[in-house]
Image (cartoon, rainbow, N blue to C red; front, side):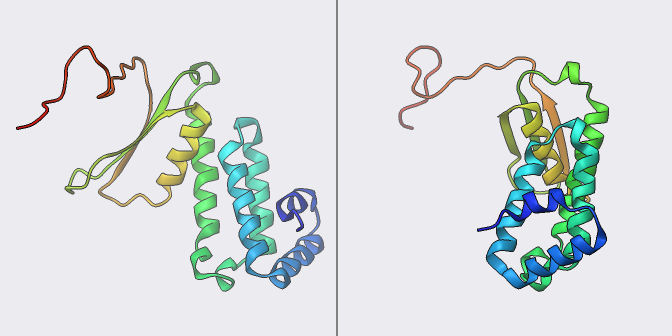
Length: 171
């Protein structure tokens, strides 16, 4: 099967993008799904030096396949999601200097007006946390908030630890 995302990286002209888009439409659902998955892998991993390239790749993809929702309704807003990820990651890279990116990071999501649990994604590298923050940021409701946090101190205890505080066996 062709690597469509790798092909997108090589395209430069409008006519090349149109031909690429037509080949994607002809290929159908499965190759388009693979293309979008490969694009997401790229979005997860790229770092600040690639912000311009990420925005350009998204521009090309949007030009080649302007309405992916015609192949699957679940892709109707995929370009908006990917654009939000690219823009948010660029802002994170601008706001957090490279010298401060080492160590453990976490992403926290909360809606203080709901009785749902807080969602926390701990133990992340900076790049993983930047992607998670950007991903969740694209669908954030007005009454929700999201935090990207660097962890300064961590103490981890499991219930299997034999010393220290023990859970109550029965009530």
